[in-house]
Length: 155
Length: 303
Image (cartoon, rainbow over all chains, first blue to last red; front, top):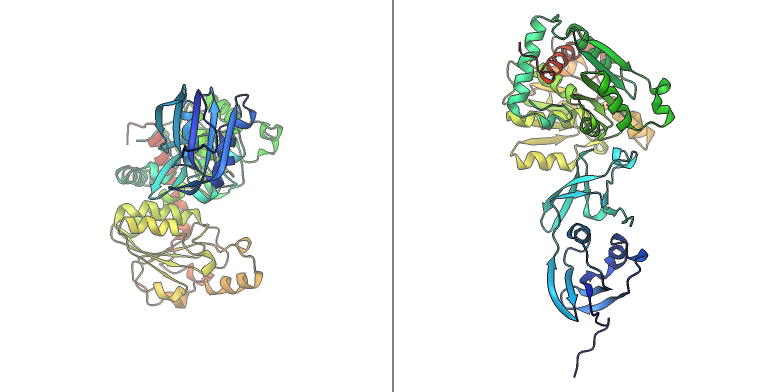
């Protein structure tokens, strides 16, 4: 029997697969897709051997810069990024949590200078396997994974 | 030497020792107008007595002129000027900036937009490195060494930035710690993990009497009313964590009591005349250590 895709294939563009279901809409937010004029199809709560339930996003005619796509590593590190040309996967990209996170994340300390003045946030990633924490360059407080608030992509 | 002093971990063990050595030289000879051609900006966005006065005393003893403000009421800050713009402007007027600001991380940010050295005189609840430096100087001066000391930290260990910075600074010198605090104000987990990683021993207790007789240093801090949700609990704790003369009758002869001040009732007045009380001399040491820090950051060659 022929395998049928729940979210139909795209000719050219980017496929973001293996997104944890509960992070799908955050990923959409981080990448600023709600304001995109490209054709986008997505599915969530699909069966996944790896995650149990997963989300998938297919964006036609759109290719991301590494810096942009790595933003989602913070909330969906297992996501797989496939670049599609003429219905074929021509490139697989691996996400990596950057050693320094600039912008993207809000510092959870309400008294941090970055929450009061126009200062771009900057963190050092502390990998504490399997989790990670972000150490604020300015106030020296740690923002852990559970308190991660993403600054939406302004594009 | 680093260009700025923002956080105590900007300074290595050697840089700390170099600063303390310079402080000792300034204590020997406190009037050294080596910076008569320099202007130091002292900008205090929130009130402070001891820190501001001791910085300004230190600057004056070095011969420098001091400009600045101690109240944002009549500055452009009330017109909505950003910290960046204030710092850009001040760094055009002065050769070094001393800043106190209520927001955490403000001093680090200031150092990154300033063209001249910046000294953090307290950024919110984060760091107060010159206090730590004067604490270290006081410990060195009274104990003759920094290594292998037993330090009992008492009171508000949760919010007290001075205890956190002192803990980090002392970790260069193989100490052992006792943390004496009420349940509500215990040393945060992240600092205990920090010590565990470095194999530095510590114990915790709720009882002030536990750690007096074998301590080299008792570092007292103020328990603040606003930290408690239950005012009755505050009243109870306030009375328990009060050190009096009879409690220190069996302590080690070299033991000294430090306190960043202001003190309220955590040290009874009868302790003041004891030769174990060191908190007022500790405050005086602030002038020499701040002279040393200013001199090192301005690159004095006669140190």
